Image (cartoon, rainbow, N blue to C red):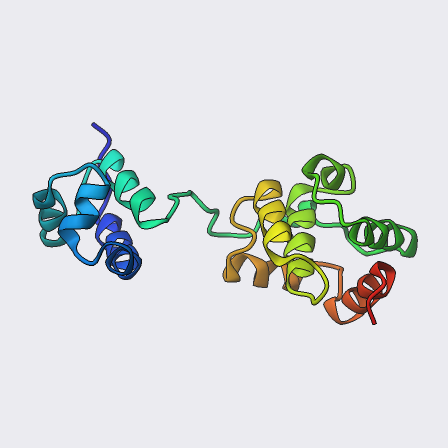
Length: 173
């Protein structure tokens, strides 16, 4: 049986507020996860459990368990600089409204393109949910604040320049 680490206790604590809002009690949360209520009670006292249990609790609370890289990938996953013609291709892609991961992958490394999708998700006129889903399909974890902050710091794309140009291409003031 695969066992989780004490991280399970922290994850359950993080999910608890959403579960209480959704179910009203730990007993109902456990029932929705298909678990005896004693399992959740024991987990709160001794934060270690089988990963299937943790996944069932997460799913019922509206969460997804995922492994997310803790460090940014090496710089080789970013272009050294943003040449004007490459920037123009990226602006055309942004203006197209496409959220097809294959089309985006054709324009650059998954980490770089995922960060660009998160950047667009932050701009007025771009569908936040669609671009965040695209970003996560391109590079899981890129939409976390820490990962995106690392992308912004290392990327040759300058948001203050790129976003207004992307909005204009898309036809927004």
